[in-house]
Image 1: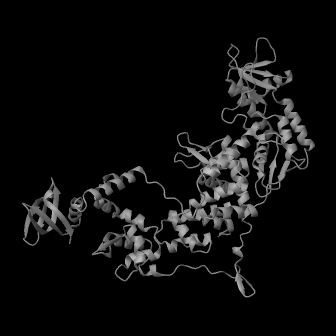
Image 2: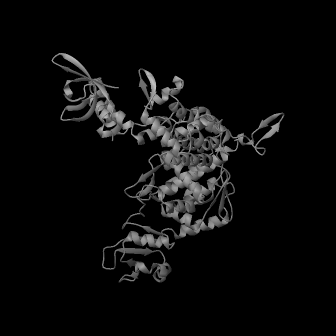
Image 3: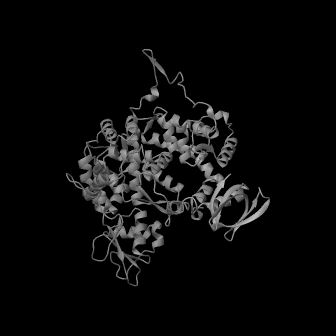
Length: 605
């Protein structure tokens, strides 16, 4: 109830509510909880300072004292968790190595799990999957559920389009979301790429990984970060120790830590649960050292690809951003990894041509990238598509024949369209002149979509103009192909955006994440409490102190001034209304009434 807090006592009342205390206790470690229960048994001041900052420790004559509300809520929470106060003093759990995990060499026991030299394989794979998924979402936005989460049908569709396992697709979407490369549009229930996505796609694969890794570390919960700092780089052990180290941590936080461990493994931040060397440097804030090590251990960009006669493409390693974009526009992924495989199909090439590319540009791309030349089956497919490109043109029509006119390059193609049962809903018919034109009563864009679904190479044109392009992604494929020996406009823009992001973007430091700004409601609360404490120190809290005494039925010492004389009373407040206090004077055995403006001090007894 932030809007109702106007002074320090009001804030204290809100913070001492059971639900507020429970939220403050949940992320505390065992020793901190034990310190709260042992305030009278010589707890060290350094143990109490963090608890006092949270408002969980009071003061009594300048000495630390327990707050009854905190103690009661803590004991209740421990009972709910099945713990006793004595169990809080148990030492942290340690996970000894089993015989299968340890190897004795020259008298030393070595843990094979400490070898994280293979981290780059998962890193390269995750970056490749992220780039592929990002391109699919750029062209075809995903669907969101009503609560803003990503729909299952979106995950399945992306998995089918990219050849990525659905579980890995979900983790990849999480990585892209943490890096702010995705943008949710809840009003339209669509998942789109963000404005920073082109810049990320224009980065080398090492820099892409660093951005995803840094964003993932920034999302780590404080409890997991604390546990990791004392686990010798074993993230899996740190997550497993959370229920013991933080006994009041909600189950949802423990589940989130488990998901974080899986995401870190998928991204190559860990190998078998242990932090890789670049990840450890990044977590410690050594960005440049992490970048240098990652560039040294990650594979260099591949010089080209191997196009096979069966139209499969073997990609022996990560490609430069320009080459990767060009190949992605002309083929479909089958397997994404350190070495990937793709497939050139008639559909993939036809879609590239529909978006504005030409068969000659596609031939130039394959000629530039293929280390084995262009095999005959691919040459035949490109030549066939080139002959068919532009064979069907559709434009708007305003005559009696219909709303769309279809112009075909060959008479036999027109006959085929008229008898094709998959196109019956278009109601195609010839005009009065019986020329090389067909007409439909549907709109031109609907006709083009239906012809494309039926695998006819149709293009939408305006009378006397060139084929139109998609307004959002128009010419994306054609421009991404570029030309031999030059950088395409799209790639140039991506690289420029990537450079600007590297210079002006947020730091990747993950060891000390910046505190988020307070919401406006809480910022206003802080300002009100600060002004109340500054403007009326000691007097602005009288009303709240009296209200607390009435609520708790506790006596207070009230000092009042009248006609220049000061009087002190030991009272049990009964009610406070209309600017007057009604209370029982326990010493005199009478009931007294005071105007509040006469009271100069109120002290708890």
